[in-house]
Image (cartoon, rainbow, N blue to C red):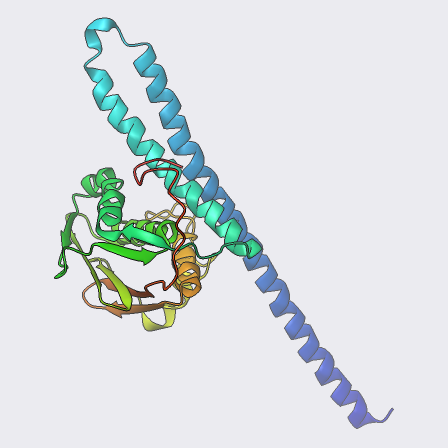
Length: 272
């Protein structure tokens, strides 16, 4: 082997070494993000569940003369149960998406009623940050729309939760929902810091957090927007993100042309 071949071989080894170091770093970062993800998932299940148990025990142990306090505790239990329901639905949805077992199930759905019931589940979160939610829809009477009710419901929930999470205290969230003969369009705008153009795709990554601090003030497990993206794609829809003194996310979902006539087993307000 001559000198030039030895030099060439050394360069190739150096390149391979650098690539190997980069790969190891990516694997380490990935494991760190997954650990962070699991930690957040555990907190978001354990915390509401612990609150429900403690509040229930307090109601059981109330003296008869203090039963009026039970009403306030029941409200807190309902709020914590709604949080738990939301997080579990996201976990189950992510598992189904990962397994490739999530199909489209279209049926006639009162979308305005579905949106209103979804908003009610976030009453406590809105109140805690003193956020006002406004509906700027021009079409207030949507009627029934042929769509996948469960997927649309979870899309609404995740977009509303995300808007609350990143809105400033005492801010305003503006939603808009409309339909035409072909599409259902839903948009939601918060008054938070906005998203830079180079981060617009990253926010839909399941394990990507723009703030990876373990005790980030915004919390969250990273599932929400990844599920929104997966469901919108499954429904052949589109997502658009705009920075307009905050973040505005708009989804357009084509109305289904076929319908599943099976009746719902549960009402929109039922948990789980």
